[in-house]
Image 1: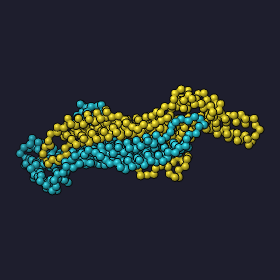
Image 2 (image 1 turned 120 degrees about the horizontal axis):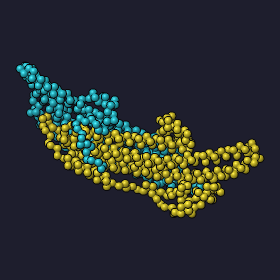
Image 3 (image 1 turned 180 degrees about the vertical axis):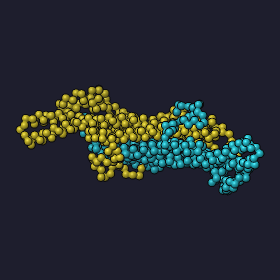
Image 4 (image 1 turned 180 degrees about the horizontal axis):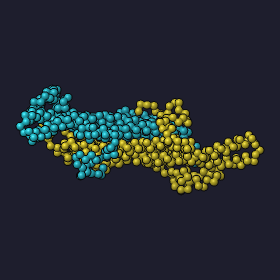
Length: 300
Length: 300
């Protein structure tokens, strides 16, 4: 990690679409991305890319499980009792490593669907911004062309409503984005820790298995001593199984204060949004309806 | 790991080619495998499959690095200082996670090339077995058809030489297989431990970064308190970097007694193979020529 402390080059400007995702820029995924509202395009692409990571880990896991079986078969075919037993047991371990890789991919799926809730709010906030901008433009146009138009009064009223609606939308966006970003990546990193710790357990026991294989060289015609360590090998598998069974995820908590109601507003009855949302129709439904106190919770 | 303690079904017989690798059975790789000597076919396929695992991890790593950049770009575009800073730092962590995945793939490459040395010995032992079998067959044929043939004496002598050569070949196979199997998988599992421990370090520090993102919801129109945790976020990256720098691989050793000379025989001057390899021409070159004592060494 000897690189800079930021991924952004000094030249990067907002709206610059370059970055890691350029390889699929003109692909099918990008075509569909172009139908996404501007606001949610970046996250839309990121969520697509996450699919590639997920399928790569799934594929790695499946191949590992396949190789585990192949190793076991190969060991059997050597007609060497020691190699046969150890390779079969190593195969069991490799297979479990593969399963953990697939579980990791499943956990990333969950992470990915949490990210989608941010993208969805982004997509839904875009029309609210567009509406406000459109009314503002129309007012400017009318003021220039027909300064006395009675439609101006109507538009000014519409603008107040649109601004109020947009204020709510932006607050929802901010609330959901912060909450879900934390939740998503807290889960992502918890999944990394789980995979890491479990695979480390398996790898260490697997090395114990290897120690049972006597690699003292023989001279031609000499028979190797009979292999009698099946019991020890089985015990190592049992040890690994027990360690995995006793494993629990122990992590520093990621604290959260996010306690949102169905309207993505603070779920506290004592907060009124009337002062900031002047008379628009959404006030009632957006105001916190659950009479619960904010709790200090934990994301994962 | 609640499955059986062996990957072999009770019905599995030697020579049964089924197992995990069936999906590519009729593929191009299998066609080339069919030109491999029988003895090395299984390992040939396994080594091919390992390529798929390696490229899956490489691909997962590259995509992760791409996503890291996308996340950072997205964060910048939110115009939210806190999200922008945290997402950029999380991006640095994700990028490093991706690099570790690629390093893991490189380590598997090394593991894979050690496996190849077993496959190569297997492939080279096959002709020796074939030769012995062919001479034996011919002797049987002649004994039946021309029991008085003078060629029988010549063939019997050839058989003694072929048997001697094969004894050496089988000893080489056994010596190399055991040594390299241990070496290969000890390295494989060491790579798993390295990736696991380093990724765990990154994941835990990443969760500390997330804790810096205040997800207390706001009501419409309220401004969020200014974000002033850049310094803390930078410190977390520095902590992660330092932990990775101080990291060392600490593992129980996998002991080895394999100390082979260039002929894949025990590299000890005091061992003579004359008693088992009766008068064949390879004796001198196969006998241990290095006057070193066998050492208790460690595979990785």
